[in-house]
Figure 1 (tube, rainbow, N blue to C red):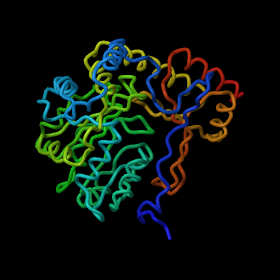
Figure 2 (cartoon, helix red, strand yellow):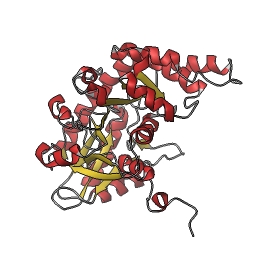
Figure 3 (cartoon, rainbow, N blue to C red):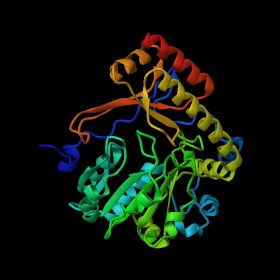
Figure 4 (cartoon, rainbow, N blue to C red):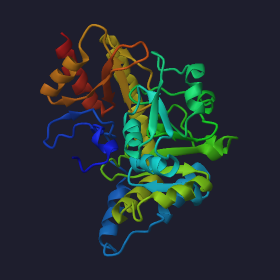
Amino acid sequence: MSLFRPDVDRIQGYVPGEQPQDDGWIKLNTNENPYPPSPRVAAAVADACSGRLNVYPDPLASRFRKAAAELFNVDPEWILPANGSDENLTILNRAFVDPGELVTFPYPSYILYETLADIQGAAHERLQLEPDWSWNIDRVRPQIERSKLVFVPNPNSPSGNCWADETIHELVPPNGVFVLDEAYGDFRDEPHCGEILHTDAGRQIVITRTLSKSYSLAGIRFGFAVAHPDLISGMRKVKDSYNCNTLSLAAASAAIEDQDWMLQNRRKIVSTRFRLTTALRASGFDVVDSEANFVWATHSEISHQKIYEELKARKVLVRFMKFPDSLDGTELTGLRITVGTDDETDGFLSILGEILQ
Protein backbone atom coordinates (compact mmCIF):
# COMPACT_ATOMS: atom_id res chain seq x y z
CA MET A 1 0.00 0.00 0.00
CA SER A 2 1.35 3.40 -0.95
CA LEU A 3 1.61 6.13 1.66
CA PHE A 4 1.23 8.82 -0.98
CA ARG A 5 -1.93 10.52 -2.17
CA PRO A 6 -3.27 8.88 -5.35
CA ASP A 7 -2.70 12.13 -7.27
CA VAL A 8 1.00 12.01 -6.34
CA ASP A 9 1.34 8.29 -7.06
CA ARG A 10 0.10 8.57 -10.63
CA ILE A 11 2.19 11.54 -11.82
CA GLN A 12 5.74 11.35 -13.12
CA GLY A 13 6.83 14.76 -11.85
CA TYR A 14 8.52 17.58 -13.69
CA VAL A 15 12.08 16.92 -14.86
CA PRO A 16 14.26 20.07 -14.90
CA GLY A 17 16.94 20.66 -17.51
CA GLU A 18 20.40 19.19 -17.04
CA GLN A 19 22.80 21.10 -14.79
CA PRO A 20 26.34 19.73 -15.23
CA GLN A 21 28.58 20.45 -12.27
CA ASP A 22 31.92 20.28 -14.08
CA ASP A 23 33.53 22.98 -16.23
CA GLY A 24 34.00 23.23 -19.97
CA TRP A 25 30.39 23.12 -21.18
CA ILE A 26 28.63 25.38 -23.63
CA LYS A 27 25.32 25.40 -21.76
CA LEU A 28 22.36 26.43 -23.90
CA ASN A 29 19.60 24.24 -22.48
CA THR A 30 17.77 26.01 -19.64
CA ASN A 31 17.36 29.61 -20.83
CA GLU A 32 19.61 31.19 -18.24
CA ASN A 33 20.99 34.62 -18.97
CA PRO A 34 24.61 34.24 -20.14
CA TYR A 35 25.60 37.59 -18.62
CA PRO A 36 26.13 38.31 -14.90
CA PRO A 37 23.61 40.25 -12.83
CA SER A 38 24.03 43.89 -11.95
CA PRO A 39 27.12 44.60 -9.79
CA ARG A 40 24.68 46.02 -7.27
CA VAL A 41 23.48 42.48 -6.57
CA ALA A 42 26.76 41.20 -5.13
CA ALA A 43 27.11 44.34 -3.04
CA ALA A 44 23.57 43.99 -1.70
CA VAL A 45 24.04 40.31 -0.83
CA ALA A 46 27.36 41.05 0.92
CA ASP A 47 25.67 43.78 2.91
CA ALA A 48 22.81 41.45 3.84
CA CYS A 49 25.30 38.77 4.95
CA SER A 50 26.78 41.20 7.46
CA GLY A 51 23.33 42.12 8.72
CA ARG A 52 20.46 40.45 10.50
CA LEU A 53 20.59 36.86 9.29
CA ASN A 54 19.51 35.70 12.75
CA VAL A 55 15.99 37.10 12.28
CA TYR A 56 13.28 36.29 9.76
CA PRO A 57 13.10 38.29 6.52
CA ASP A 58 10.49 40.92 5.75
CA PRO A 59 7.41 38.76 5.01
CA LEU A 60 5.94 41.45 2.74
CA ALA A 61 9.18 42.15 0.81
CA SER A 62 8.45 45.87 1.10
CA ARG A 63 11.50 47.20 -0.75
CA PHE A 64 11.08 44.83 -3.68
CA ARG A 65 7.34 45.40 -3.95
CA LYS A 66 7.89 49.15 -4.11
CA ALA A 67 10.45 48.81 -6.94
CA ALA A 68 8.33 46.34 -8.94
CA ALA A 69 5.22 48.45 -8.47
CA GLU A 70 7.00 51.47 -9.96
CA LEU A 71 7.85 49.44 -13.08
CA PHE A 72 4.22 48.43 -13.56
CA ASN A 73 2.81 51.80 -12.51
CA VAL A 74 0.70 50.30 -9.72
CA ASP A 75 0.67 50.40 -5.92
CA PRO A 76 2.78 47.83 -3.99
CA GLU A 77 -0.44 46.04 -2.98
CA TRP A 78 -0.57 44.74 -6.58
CA ILE A 79 2.72 42.78 -6.16
CA LEU A 80 3.28 39.32 -4.66
CA PRO A 81 6.94 38.17 -4.50
CA ALA A 82 7.71 34.43 -4.56
CA ASN A 83 10.51 31.90 -4.42
CA GLY A 84 10.76 31.81 -8.20
CA SER A 85 7.90 32.29 -10.63
CA ASP A 86 7.07 28.59 -10.27
CA GLU A 87 6.04 29.17 -6.66
CA ASN A 88 3.46 31.68 -7.80
CA LEU A 89 2.14 29.10 -10.29
CA THR A 90 1.71 26.74 -7.33
CA ILE A 91 0.05 29.47 -5.25
CA LEU A 92 -2.40 30.15 -8.08
CA ASN A 93 -3.50 26.51 -8.13
CA ARG A 94 -3.85 26.47 -4.34
CA ALA A 95 -5.80 29.71 -4.22
CA PHE A 96 -8.27 29.30 -7.09
CA VAL A 97 -8.73 25.61 -7.96
CA ASP A 98 -10.63 22.97 -6.01
CA PRO A 99 -10.11 19.27 -6.79
CA GLY A 100 -11.95 18.40 -9.97
CA GLU A 101 -12.14 21.97 -11.31
CA LEU A 102 -10.65 22.58 -14.73
CA VAL A 103 -7.18 23.99 -15.44
CA THR A 104 -6.26 24.60 -19.08
CA PHE A 105 -3.05 25.61 -20.86
CA PRO A 106 -1.69 25.64 -24.42
CA TYR A 107 0.06 22.63 -25.88
CA PRO A 108 2.85 22.34 -26.82
CA SER A 109 4.01 24.59 -24.01
CA TYR A 110 5.42 24.59 -20.47
CA ILE A 111 4.63 21.13 -19.10
CA LEU A 112 4.85 22.18 -15.43
CA TYR A 113 1.30 23.58 -15.70
CA GLU A 114 0.01 20.03 -16.09
CA THR A 115 2.09 18.71 -13.20
CA LEU A 116 0.86 21.40 -10.82
CA ALA A 117 -2.76 20.73 -11.75
CA ASP A 118 -2.23 17.02 -11.09
CA ILE A 119 -0.76 17.72 -7.66
CA GLN A 120 -3.78 19.88 -6.81
CA GLY A 121 -6.16 17.11 -7.87
CA ALA A 122 -7.61 19.35 -10.55
CA ALA A 123 -8.94 18.29 -13.90
CA HIS A 124 -6.84 19.59 -16.76
CA GLU A 125 -7.07 19.86 -20.52
CA ARG A 126 -4.63 20.94 -23.18
CA LEU A 127 -5.55 23.79 -25.50
CA GLN A 128 -4.10 22.49 -28.75
CA LEU A 129 -2.10 25.03 -30.73
CA GLU A 130 -2.05 25.02 -34.51
CA PRO A 131 1.07 23.63 -36.26
CA ASP A 132 2.24 27.22 -36.84
CA TRP A 133 1.86 27.96 -33.06
CA SER A 134 -1.25 30.10 -33.57
CA TRP A 135 -4.64 29.72 -31.88
CA ASN A 136 -7.91 28.49 -33.29
CA ILE A 137 -10.09 30.46 -30.88
CA ASP A 138 -13.34 28.86 -32.00
CA ARG A 139 -11.94 25.39 -31.27
CA VAL A 140 -10.63 26.16 -27.77
CA ARG A 141 -13.43 28.50 -26.66
CA PRO A 142 -15.62 25.71 -25.16
CA GLN A 143 -12.67 24.64 -23.00
CA ILE A 144 -11.94 28.22 -21.97
CA GLU A 145 -15.55 28.77 -20.94
CA ARG A 146 -15.37 25.75 -18.58
CA SER A 147 -12.01 26.71 -17.06
CA LYS A 148 -11.40 27.91 -13.52
CA LEU A 149 -7.76 28.69 -14.29
CA VAL A 150 -6.11 29.31 -17.67
CA PHE A 151 -2.31 29.50 -18.00
CA VAL A 152 -0.83 31.13 -21.10
CA PRO A 153 2.90 31.88 -21.44
CA ASN A 154 3.65 34.84 -23.68
CA PRO A 155 6.21 34.45 -25.23
CA ASN A 156 5.50 30.75 -25.39
CA SER A 157 8.01 28.03 -24.59
CA PRO A 158 9.41 26.11 -26.42
CA SER A 159 8.48 28.08 -29.54
CA GLY A 160 9.43 31.61 -28.44
CA ASN A 161 6.61 33.18 -30.44
CA CYS A 162 4.36 35.90 -29.06
CA TRP A 163 0.58 36.27 -29.40
CA ALA A 164 -1.13 39.59 -29.96
CA ASP A 165 -3.05 41.29 -27.16
CA GLU A 166 -6.29 40.80 -29.08
CA THR A 167 -5.77 37.03 -28.99
CA ILE A 168 -4.86 37.05 -25.30
CA HIS A 169 -8.10 38.84 -24.41
CA GLU A 170 -10.11 36.07 -26.07
CA LEU A 171 -8.52 33.46 -23.80
CA VAL A 172 -9.77 34.96 -20.51
CA PRO A 173 -12.33 32.58 -18.96
CA PRO A 174 -15.72 34.12 -18.14
CA ASN A 175 -15.82 32.60 -14.63
CA GLY A 176 -12.20 32.01 -13.80
CA VAL A 177 -8.70 33.45 -13.54
CA PHE A 178 -6.35 34.02 -16.45
CA VAL A 179 -2.60 33.75 -15.80
CA LEU A 180 -0.34 35.57 -18.25
CA ASP A 181 3.04 33.94 -17.67
CA GLU A 182 5.61 36.50 -18.82
CA ALA A 183 8.75 34.66 -17.77
CA TYR A 184 10.35 35.85 -21.02
CA GLY A 185 8.41 39.10 -21.28
CA ASP A 186 11.42 41.40 -21.13
CA PHE A 187 12.74 39.93 -24.39
CA ARG A 188 9.64 40.83 -26.39
CA ASP A 189 9.93 43.28 -29.24
CA GLU A 190 7.53 45.49 -27.27
CA PRO A 191 7.69 44.46 -23.59
CA HIS A 192 4.54 44.91 -21.51
CA CYS A 193 4.21 46.81 -18.26
CA GLY A 194 0.88 45.35 -17.16
CA GLU A 195 -1.43 47.35 -19.40
CA ILE A 196 -3.76 44.34 -19.69
CA LEU A 197 -4.52 44.62 -15.97
CA HIS A 198 -6.35 47.89 -16.60
CA THR A 199 -8.77 46.48 -19.19
CA ASP A 200 -12.34 45.31 -18.54
CA ALA A 201 -11.11 41.79 -17.73
CA GLY A 202 -8.20 43.03 -15.62
CA ARG A 203 -9.66 41.96 -12.28
CA GLN A 204 -9.49 38.32 -13.48
CA ILE A 205 -5.88 38.47 -14.73
CA VAL A 206 -2.61 37.66 -12.96
CA ILE A 207 0.75 38.41 -14.58
CA THR A 208 3.71 36.32 -13.42
CA ARG A 209 7.32 37.37 -13.88
CA THR A 210 10.69 35.87 -12.98
CA LEU A 211 14.11 37.37 -12.29
CA SER A 212 15.84 34.20 -13.56
CA LYS A 213 15.94 35.24 -17.21
CA SER A 214 16.33 38.93 -17.94
CA TYR A 215 17.86 39.81 -14.55
CA SER A 216 20.39 36.91 -14.49
CA LEU A 217 19.23 35.57 -11.10
CA ALA A 218 18.36 31.93 -11.88
CA GLY A 219 20.49 30.81 -8.93
CA ILE A 220 18.63 33.06 -6.51
CA ARG A 221 15.09 31.79 -7.29
CA PHE A 222 12.89 34.86 -7.27
CA GLY A 223 9.72 35.83 -9.10
CA PHE A 224 6.62 37.92 -8.56
CA ALA A 225 2.99 38.24 -9.54
CA VAL A 226 1.15 41.41 -10.51
CA ALA A 227 -2.63 41.57 -10.14
CA HIS A 228 -5.49 43.55 -8.64
CA PRO A 229 -5.17 43.68 -4.82
CA ASP A 230 -8.33 41.59 -4.44
CA LEU A 231 -6.53 38.70 -6.15
CA ILE A 232 -3.18 39.30 -4.46
CA SER A 233 -4.74 39.34 -0.98
CA GLY A 234 -6.26 35.90 -1.52
CA MET A 235 -3.05 34.50 -2.97
CA ARG A 236 -1.11 35.82 0.02
CA LYS A 237 -3.27 33.65 2.32
CA VAL A 238 -1.85 30.44 0.86
CA LYS A 239 1.80 31.37 0.40
CA ASP A 240 4.41 30.17 2.88
CA SER A 241 4.96 32.61 5.73
CA TYR A 242 8.52 33.62 4.80
CA ASN A 243 8.75 32.40 1.23
CA CYS A 244 11.58 34.76 0.20
CA ASN A 245 14.77 34.74 2.24
CA THR A 246 16.87 37.74 3.26
CA LEU A 247 19.58 37.17 0.65
CA SER A 248 17.18 36.64 -2.24
CA LEU A 249 15.23 39.75 -1.27
CA ALA A 250 18.43 41.80 -1.23
CA ALA A 251 19.55 40.41 -4.60
CA ALA A 252 16.17 40.81 -6.29
CA SER A 253 15.67 44.35 -5.04
CA ALA A 254 19.11 45.44 -6.22
CA ALA A 255 18.61 43.79 -9.61
CA ILE A 256 15.20 45.25 -10.39
CA GLU A 257 16.34 48.70 -9.32
CA ASP A 258 19.13 48.62 -11.94
CA GLN A 259 17.08 48.71 -15.14
CA ASP A 260 19.95 50.06 -17.21
CA TRP A 261 22.02 46.92 -16.57
CA MET A 262 19.14 44.58 -17.45
CA LEU A 263 18.32 46.48 -20.63
CA GLN A 264 21.97 46.47 -21.72
CA ASN A 265 22.10 42.67 -21.41
CA ARG A 266 18.73 42.37 -23.15
CA ARG A 267 20.03 44.28 -26.18
CA LYS A 268 23.01 41.92 -26.47
CA ILE A 269 20.79 38.84 -26.26
CA VAL A 270 18.33 40.14 -28.86
CA SER A 271 21.20 40.92 -31.23
CA THR A 272 22.73 37.46 -30.79
CA ARG A 273 19.30 35.84 -31.18
CA PHE A 274 19.02 37.35 -34.65
CA ARG A 275 22.46 36.09 -35.62
CA LEU A 276 21.74 32.60 -34.22
CA THR A 277 18.42 32.40 -36.06
CA THR A 278 20.02 33.46 -39.34
CA ALA A 279 22.83 30.90 -39.04
CA LEU A 280 20.48 28.03 -38.16
CA ARG A 281 18.23 28.78 -41.12
CA ALA A 282 21.27 28.84 -43.39
CA SER A 283 22.11 25.35 -42.07
CA GLY A 284 18.74 23.95 -43.11
CA PHE A 285 16.74 24.39 -39.90
CA ASP A 286 13.26 25.82 -39.63
CA VAL A 287 13.35 28.39 -36.83
CA VAL A 288 10.30 30.07 -35.30
CA ASP A 289 10.53 33.85 -35.06
CA SER A 290 11.36 34.21 -31.37
CA GLU A 291 10.70 37.03 -28.92
CA ALA A 292 12.36 35.16 -26.05
CA ASN A 293 15.97 34.38 -25.08
CA PHE A 294 15.90 31.08 -26.97
CA VAL A 295 14.90 29.71 -30.36
CA TRP A 296 12.97 26.61 -31.45
CA ALA A 297 14.68 24.82 -34.32
CA THR A 298 13.54 21.80 -36.31
CA HIS A 299 15.12 19.94 -39.21
CA SER A 300 13.17 17.86 -41.69
CA GLU A 301 15.95 15.42 -42.55
CA ILE A 302 18.00 14.83 -39.39
CA SER A 303 17.01 13.29 -36.05
CA HIS A 304 16.76 16.00 -33.39
CA GLN A 305 17.65 13.50 -30.70
CA LYS A 306 20.78 12.47 -32.60
CA ILE A 307 21.87 16.10 -32.93
CA TYR A 308 21.28 16.62 -29.21
CA GLU A 309 23.30 13.52 -28.31
CA GLU A 310 26.21 14.41 -30.60
CA LEU A 311 26.30 17.94 -29.23
CA LYS A 312 26.28 16.62 -25.67
CA ALA A 313 29.16 14.26 -26.48
CA ARG A 314 31.12 17.40 -27.39
CA LYS A 315 30.07 19.17 -24.13
CA VAL A 316 27.40 21.34 -25.73
CA LEU A 317 23.97 21.22 -24.10
CA VAL A 318 20.74 22.20 -25.82
CA ARG A 319 17.23 21.00 -24.91
CA PHE A 320 15.82 18.13 -26.95
CA MET A 321 12.05 18.18 -26.51
CA LYS A 322 9.23 15.98 -27.71
CA PHE A 323 5.48 16.45 -27.50
CA PRO A 324 3.65 13.19 -28.27
CA ASP A 325 0.17 14.53 -29.01
CA SER A 326 0.39 17.50 -31.34
CA LEU A 327 -2.65 18.71 -33.27
CA ASP A 328 -2.10 16.56 -36.35
CA GLY A 329 -1.67 13.42 -34.23
CA THR A 330 2.07 13.08 -34.74
CA GLU A 331 4.88 13.50 -32.24
CA LEU A 332 6.47 16.94 -32.40
CA THR A 333 10.20 17.03 -31.68
CA GLY A 334 12.76 19.78 -31.88
CA LEU A 335 15.66 21.59 -30.26
CA ARG A 336 15.20 24.53 -27.94
CA ILE A 337 18.44 26.51 -27.96
CA THR A 338 19.20 29.23 -25.43
CA VAL A 339 20.82 32.41 -26.71
CA GLY A 340 24.28 32.50 -25.17
CA THR A 341 27.11 34.99 -25.43
CA ASP A 342 28.56 35.62 -28.87
CA ASP A 343 31.48 33.31 -28.04
CA GLU A 344 29.16 30.53 -26.82
CA THR A 345 26.97 30.92 -29.89
CA ASP A 346 29.97 30.80 -32.23
CA GLY A 347 31.25 27.68 -30.46
CA PHE A 348 27.86 25.99 -30.72
CA LEU A 349 27.47 26.84 -34.41
CA SER A 350 30.97 25.61 -35.19
CA ILE A 351 30.38 22.24 -33.49
CA LEU A 352 26.90 21.95 -35.02
CA GLY A 353 28.47 22.52 -38.46
CA GLU A 354 30.87 19.62 -37.87
CA ILE A 355 27.97 17.34 -36.91
CA LEU A 356 25.93 18.30 -39.99
CA GLN A 357 28.76 17.62 -42.45
